[in-house]
Length: 471
Image (cartoon, rainbow, N blue to C red; front, top):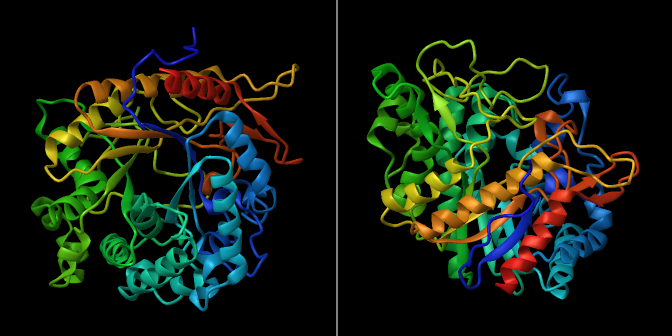
């Protein structure tokens, strides 16, 4: 039986309930209003890069349907909406500011505020201007400084109304998947470029935090997608080593520079052949570890890990396209991900709600400088359909969201300082290399008519928000 609503829990005062999207995935208007190519627009033209040869030109047309989409958010009772601005729309070709691009985001912010919804802005959700990739992209140190120019332009336009600023969403994906495995744009398969991209995105984050804070920004953070690396056999040194390597590349290579001002020694050792130490300048880590006002945690699944070959194993980071791709596990390509026999989503991701509780509690135990946490993405793709009654009955997604919300409550009860939860995603959308094949939305989008339909999961979430506020 599907769980219809989360277990009752008294949430901390001011706890935020929201949903999230990304510009490239929903906006459309791919070359309208002055916007030029992002790396994802260019990547979509590579044969076999995107399932179904889909592109981002229309996406779900949020650019033209924004007021109606905000009305849907208001009908669901969202406290906050986490969205991203597109660098390629704000500074096409990374040249001058595009007033039409900034005007779209200004209108979005005004629409949200008029609806009583807190705007939560992400500056980078993977859509680097292709013109910068042509100059080396994130493998080039100069891109970090270009990011600061872009960030300060957005802040100058919106900082009078936007109070919460996220620099990067999931740098793991835009570095190791984009430059290492080639699953994501720009589609490069170069271990040295991937490692350089990790560091240069860290640097861009720290530079932007310092610049925005000096201009008056008060709520600054970053969002990481984090996992639990669970060795298959805790008595097997090979499995223990595989879990260490996954934890290094998925978690600590991001957390430690940000929160401790240093890369882990084992990470530096593992990545020595790929030049990590070579791209670190003397003052970089002091810049990167600028104090954070919050840490966003994205979590969809955790990982059982082995160092042995396993016929049941599948790497959930392999993407959905026909094009040949590599491994994001730079220098540790041998690690495998055996099945635990758990239910799986349409993304082939195992469903283990308690993993989220464990992760949130563990972060507080392991990092002394940990700022307040927000679960900035959590959700699931399933192959839902419109029923004869016109509704979208998605019991698996409904249960997934409800059970994970329960685990956030348990983490708070265990001492984790979690202050908000954002479900991914508000709308079905362009799911990167999977194109339009995978649906994460709590609101269904008909890709032919672009009609929106709130799913049962969305109705459950709205009811939960009402109950949480009433409690």
